Image (cartoon, rainbow, N blue to C red):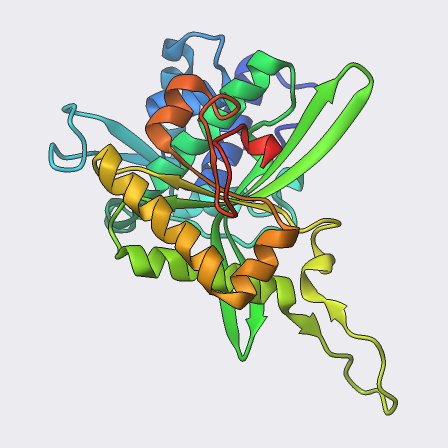
Length: 302
């Protein structure tokens, strides 16, 4: 089997789908059968994708496990991930070039990462479905999980995902980017709000020139990767609506009371929404709460 390239021409339809499945699992780490179907072939039949997954498993490139009832309400939900052979096969994919690998290549690792990772994938799929509905552009390769950036003093910020999204209106194309944080109510509200301080530190962090005798102007570190600092979006789930709304209030309090975060909020759109609303209404209609204050609105208008 040759190295897969999801953008390659000359493959049969099934061969191309095999390559895309491998790339999708390399990019998103873990998915359910239904998730990867919605990700890669939302208009196609699930049976075709299931056959491809089972053939890749027989070839030793992917494996699967089943979620327990405590992890998910429905019985027998199958999740898929790359094996070590599959991970090696996808290492040099052009679509993944320059992105650090975070492979999950065992059932133990998959079990530990499953709830959070599947929620991250669900959030991506909600944005992808909204983009299709609106005629915008956001696909499987426009969502990168676990992106790490230095914030000074030897510390790093790890975003749950970085999203690239292109809004299309006639001949106008607006390129949007966002750091996406998924909160499943598994940490304290205070720890969640502290994440805003990390983003504020990334916004302020400057790269100091090395090996220069004369002082020179420093450069914001984030400009290495982004022309404009991305939105920061919090997506909350895993608790009652009132509890999640309380957690959003704590995020707004952090913006109001922490000087670095307040400075970030004056320059960068910050918002929060409930995953249930994002999935039911679509991200554009979900009603994102601006953390700087104001009435809920679309994430693009924060």
